[in-house]
Image 1: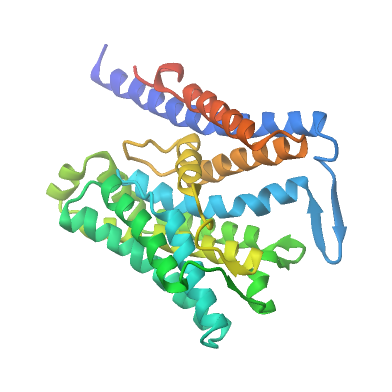
Image 2 (image 1 turned 120 degrees about the vertical axis):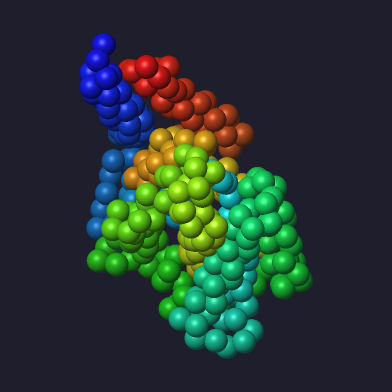
Length: 336
């Protein structure tokens, strides 16, 4: 076979592999929705009341918006051959900082929200420093902050809940914009912004190059350290916004439970969405679909009265099935 024919064949194989990865999450989400619409009473019902939309599928999007935000930041980190297991603790820390400033310091909502997001960004950048400049393994660096971030939040509050009744802040978690829940609008806006940043700037190319081969990227003169600081910082920002939504939704900073175990859901959503844990091309849309898959399954099982412990096992089985279907040996020509 000639060189040109081999190149053409590799190009077709690569295209098919990418298409295969994008197809499976959509098929899984479509199948879950179809099954629930057919077998779960009231799942497809959507109604307009008091100027906003209500229904099970609206709840899926609203409740899944937190994991969507985490998955957006996590996609960038994983695509750069890293991982951020501290996002749940960053949620707790950002919510705590904002709630304390609102409830005890009398700050205005915009300033307190900015401080909470700034705290998340600072933790994210610190993770990047540990990984890129100090040289720690990403899993170790983020595990350190997983413990330290929640511990810092508990120190700030004395391990107590911080209650707040501030309607302007509560709109972040419980409000609606033209009938659509505010958390959904925020998650969608964040996704559009990140996708535009990846496509309109060199960041997307840098992330993919660094994730594919960090040493080669460094030898080519790419700003590896700065890119890693940027993606970890963006992950911290996304986690902080998710923490503000969770805090506003329940009207308190719950340092013990806010974001607990959600880092695992975020990683799972990213992997289901087609981004390789070994690094490479980031798939933001796929990560959003992965988050919706997990939330759709959770909501449907809750509506059918399935016990929580059974729900966790079923979610794990579905995730395994989707990820197995995406395996290279099952994709046509993926490893040819």
